[in-house]
Image (cartoon, rainbow, N blue to C red):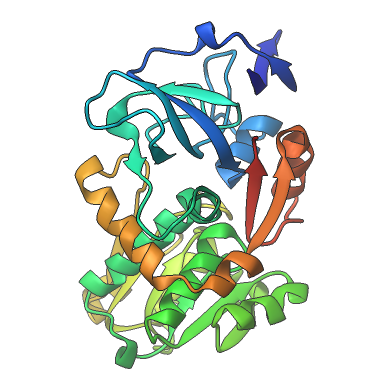
Length: 325
């Protein structure tokens, strides 16, 4: 089988397309013929070596994939069934989706939802799954369309762009934050009513600022998240799911104890299997057909290293889809 293989020798990382014997696939009870995968920010960190994502080598990266069951010892699945996988440490500590085959635990697989094809599932991928979880967090926090504006940071990325589309479909008034002027029309086409430049959120905020946002979805962290917390309405909810800026959070307790706001962490890797189908079904129902055309760059397995470097240097908009077969 063909795969992107990461190796490390004398602290030097190499990434290349190689032929790998399928007998070397790791332990698992379901083998999947992969048709589509994706390139996420975490994948790009792993492939370029910019982040300490992978600690055991050799490794096949790719935290997402969709395809068809090749063989199974898990009675929940049958040969020929369409399935998808996001998370579970696949592509980090278990060989992942940037290959023609994967062998995984059946517990990690989700049957492809009715109404969604394998390609669309990977346009959504971990980024879209995470975005849906963030939207659900806002709903559970009491943020309604009539509550006021919802702000989305890192709006040009996979999570941000999908969050804008989802919120817009649900009737929310969405404000996007992006550092890339050239993407403003794209973000408006997804459903944002306005796009703000990232530099407006780059300085340390005062403990409390003017209340502007009923809710927020943040993928950046650092001063961006701190500023949004200081500007969130009384009783507002902020869903935080990323650290594209960095992992710092230079804030105070003031927004929490004086404005009763909620900062909700969102983690998508180990969401229990039983909860996943409902999240995917909502994604299938909410995302319009236009989303799958607007938000996607399609590449081959051979182009993944090139595009990983582009992703790290902020040259990619929306989702990057990998055609494996």
